[in-house]
Length: 207
Image 1 (cartoon, one colour):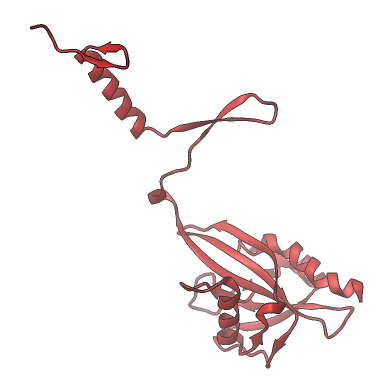
Image 2 (tube, helix red, strand yellow; image 1 turned 135 degrees about the horizontal axis):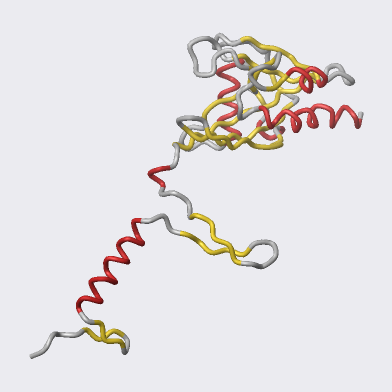
């Protein structure tokens, strides 16, 4: 008998050819794959496919709120809290909030965090989502929806060693920002400033 040949949909592949095909397929699977897409002018272009999940940074879901004081109608202020010593990014100013635990919605997590951190109760139904942050730090990727609220019950107190600061619109625009700013903030929070300022002046402009 001669060499066996395997029929595949009308094609006859010799054993050496099958070996070469198998090696090529293994090499293709171990290489970074490419996906063909079309750009705006209709011409095909290739982009790398996403890396495997094992290579992605850990996703951390947190939630934060811009607490806005409108007691002075023409001078609304937003609360920032300074991260205490001993914590990551100590000394930076941020919007209060914290991690979303398993089984929680962002709204319920925020109500819990604000009660634990600041001792006040926020009305979940009155909070409005205004934007979100998606930022990759060195060891994790942060996803953070940001809400705005101008109603709460109780007296604000720094229950976890934070420093509190009420910041007006002009101060938020001019002094809040990166490491060299007068009010330095985490990298994920900086792109949210303009949206927060809009939320601060929005209702005041309509009064």
